[in-house]
Image 1 (spheres, one colour):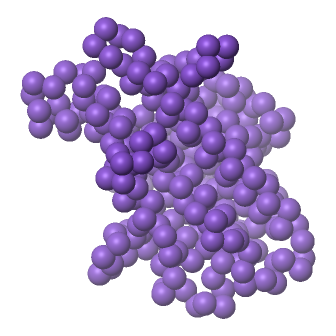
Image 2: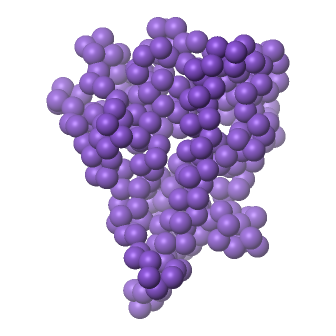
Length: 288
């Protein structure tokens, strides 16, 4: 890191560039506690949600930083490029001619979205904690610092070290989403919500050697949602195109977001009574 550049200590596991897509002011959004949905929502600053201190930093035995902000900066590059793709999709979704196209995204744009979605899965604090716990259980002599460093290097690097990257878990996970059909759902209103675990996975596709999910749902903005399906399970005519969402599909998205959320869901606007009841009913399924 250049000497004149200040190190970032507050690191977001759900990037602000993503959460802005669900914010009216671009600086704040409504936050609901999914474990206490009777509580009134909070209007929270994007700076104050989904963050931890030095979350992706490696430490030496003396407590010093190893390659400070290296992983954080790589995520920043991915986020910057993905932001451009999301803005491109937003523009295309408002063009009536594009709504009739069978092909919207380039292979490079698809790859960026897949990489971004996968990083969200693996930079999640619970995923990192699970990795640390597994390593310490498997290697009783490994201290917390070693387990944490090893977990971060196996889960997260993309471009830190090309020879190391090839065998990391995240590379395998990215490959599992390649060759999927892309569809983008459009809502006429700002009713798409997201959460602190925004990527929603279906079951593993039956008899698939690549371990692909049967589907994936990823809210892109308060009006757009990305669907992924194994290409052979979708009519080629409707793959990689826009679809208009009906009320039933929107309810399904909200319910799935609520089920997958760990602690929080986020919305551009305060949820209506009907939307909140939909979310509550979905969460209640977890108690059964």
